[in-house]
Image 1: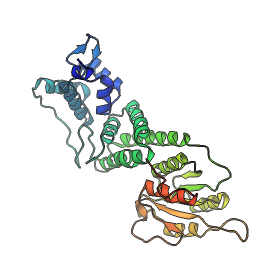
Image 2 (image 1 turned 180 degrees about the vertical axis):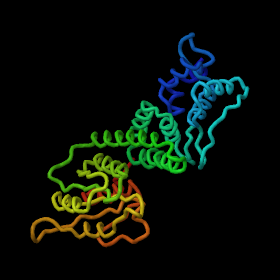
Image 3 (image 1 turned 60 degrees about the vertical axis):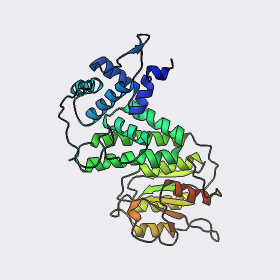
Length: 324
């Protein structure tokens, strides 16, 4: 008889639920949330009924039910009985199974990451992010897993009286770590080569989209200079003049932070020797720039994939050089 006939392994069920194998084993040891049978009396193998029990455990704990109480209720799922549990109601949105977040129709990996984030399961988040980057590549990982999960956490936080702030902080830190790790594994960058300057406009604090762009460019061996959040206009001007970039990506999350005058100034900032002076292409990155047509010398990419393609062409790469 195959292993599948006996049930699935702890590692497989952990990947399915978006938790770490350690969490699954801990639930078994602490609360008796274990498989009904074991292969050779030792190895855990999880049947469909066992998995349904764990899914209920995930749903309840993600909704704020204490683990011990959630375990008692989840065990009834396997036996077919029902136990009344006081689950805190969701404030808004339609949550994905077990996540407690308004995810909608998303990849399974996105749901797994959301479950891990809500439970503050750092090992599971790190493992899931490594796996999705390795399997799908940076662009897909960002656009279809990382960004949707971050947006869902943000919406939940905004509608829940400042709850889930700890979830957003921990998730953001792990996403940032994964992106920087991806950037560090790119090919060697030719030097000297005009870099790409990455900066948030002066009132903007959201840096993760720029970190994703930095990682995507590093994958292609393109040089970047990351200046981070809320870069003052004077500092941005100095950075452009001193580094002589081929492009400048300015991130604005909201219209209230979009500084169109600053973008026009950067697009007309010339540098280089007399007779061969040039100005950078300015990428208006982020939803804050919507509502106005791009000024001369600026472009507004629709997402990470397009931004990488636009910049790649400046270095002689193909328009579609944003695979993954």
